[in-house]
Amino acid sequence: MTSTALDDWTGSTTAFLTRQWRTAPRVYRTSPVPPLTVRDVDAAIRDPLLRTPHLALVRDGAPVPETDYTTSRTVNGTVLAGFADAGAILRGLREGCTLLLRNVEHWHAGVAALADRWQEALGRAVEGFVFVTPPGARGLAVHRDDADVLLLQIGGRKRWTVHPGPADGDWAPGAASNVGAPLLKDTLAEGDVLYIPRGFAHSATGDRGLSVHLSMTIREAGAQDAYAALQRLLLTGFTAQPRPLDDTALTAHVRRLTDRMRHALDELDPREVVTAARRARIRPRGTPSADDLTGLAARLDTPRDGSSPDGTGCPDRG
Image (tube, rainbow, N blue to C red; front, side):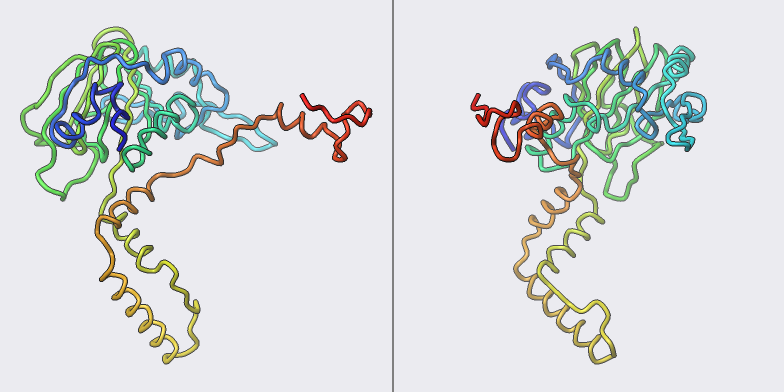
């Protein structure tokens, strides 16, 4: 963990991780520079390529039918549904719906850069979600998230209530009941940051203006992730015939497999399994490149014999 990864949002990364992490919710009045703006969100819903499931409208915990806020397009003779209809989305907001933009790091460079920095520092998958809520509206009912959440209020105001987390590991994300007395009740204004520990039940209602906030979710590995990571680590380098021909061959394969796993378990550190399980949840977003079409075009315009494009035989040294 780099000592400054979350400083802009929490004031002190070290203090946040030692005093707040997985312990209790807290509001920070830090006013970090937002990685995206309300104008960026407006541009996104008007982008002709934005499509479900990257966007959704919800109201009081219930999804709005996609046909109410999306449109269809014909691409190469095929009718495709689910494209954002900006007019219908704005109408839905006026009527009390909440707009949810999922995995903003997939298409917004600023949020992607922030997610990458936090992933590298925390060793966990980080995703970005945007919520746009009109005054007095509530998009989601009281619920628990399977992630630690740091959210930044970008525009307007929103009232938050956060309840305690689950009593043990036998819980599920989603709508929650019997959540206990609130631990935190506060109204976030532009520039405020709220931390909600993983599993802590919470809800929010638009307060003033059009509330826009960015939620950066820090995903934790679960039991199934650990199990899959353990399998990978135990079998690294192990080769076998995929289809043994008879009982003798199959039994011999299983014997080699169990011997390999037994010896590997003796040497395996459980912390290595946890790290591998967390890292496995971090999905690459494609091959990074500093190149662009203009640069590629310029290089392809240079003759292969090294002469200049004008035929003088003098390569461009500039």
